[in-house]
Length: 170
Image (cartoon, rainbow, N blue to C red; front, side):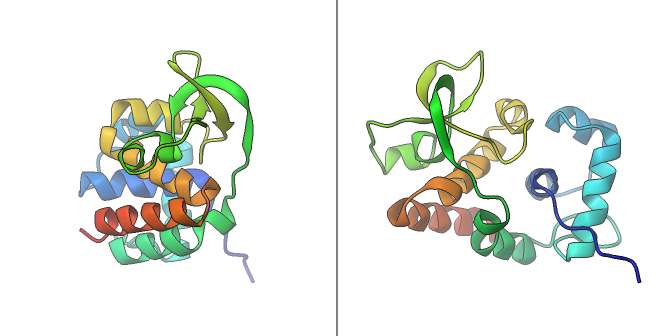
């Protein structure tokens, strides 16, 4: 009996990007947009299909299944910790859209040498997430909202869940 491979963080990144694109691009284009190898993209598609969050025919995510996983399982499957002070890109409630609803003296960032904000470091969902976020503002918002679920308190998680639900139920 073969074992079903477990989802990895990059599988969520790939599924979110595909959700936003609405149609499947060529693997090399997806790899270039996300900063992930084509082999890893292929593995991500296979794991997402086996996990039931993507369609077997083309690997595109089922919006409802992706939304359920992101809203109810992701923070348990891929928890994050708030770390040291660093320079980087804002995330969680320090980034759009939550930064308009929550004001906090403590900024949360993804460490990034090109970043302009100082704050406490949050490890991104996947190492190439900041790279991908710089290329796609809609993906950036989804990843920042996911980080609010991963590291936020009850209020931040509630606001992030509402925003994610709006975006993922389209």
